[in-house]
Image (cartoon, rainbow, N blue to C red; front, side, top):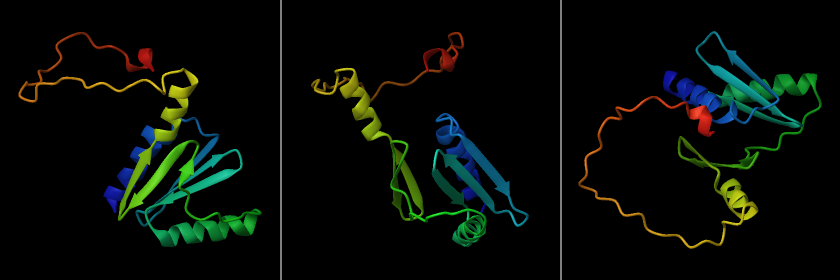
Amino acid sequence: MNGMKNLIMFYYVKVFLPMMLINVCILDLKNGECVIICLYVDDMLIFCTCNDIVFKTKLFLGSKFEMKDMGERSVIIGIKIIRKGDSILLSQEKYTEKLLKKFGYYDFKSVSTHYDANSKLKKNRGEFISQTQYA
C-alpha cells in the first residue's frame, strides 16, 4: 500500500500542484489509506489507494452536496489519463500540439538528432542553475 500512497503523492507534487488547482484536500486515513480530492472550478477528481474508499468518499460527498458522477476521466485540464493494468500514464500531447500551433511551430518538419550511443555521461561539475529560472 505504501507504494500506491507514494505514487499518489508523487502525482500531486509533480503534476497537480504545478497546475495550481483551486482546492486540494488530502486525507490520510488511520488504516494507511490516502484520499486526494482535487477541485477545479466545477470538476472534482478523487484519487485513492482503494476503490472502496473512493466509493465511500463519493457517497459521503453526495449526501452533503448535489453531485453527478461522470465516471473515470480520460482528460482533465488538457492532460490525457491512460490506464493500463495497475499503471497510470499522464500525457500532455494535446496541450503540446496546441502550444506548437499557437506559436506557429506545428507544421515544422522533424529532424534526427545524432547521438553516439557509446558515449559515457559525466557528472555535471558546473554551478547549480535554478530550474525555476527557465520554467
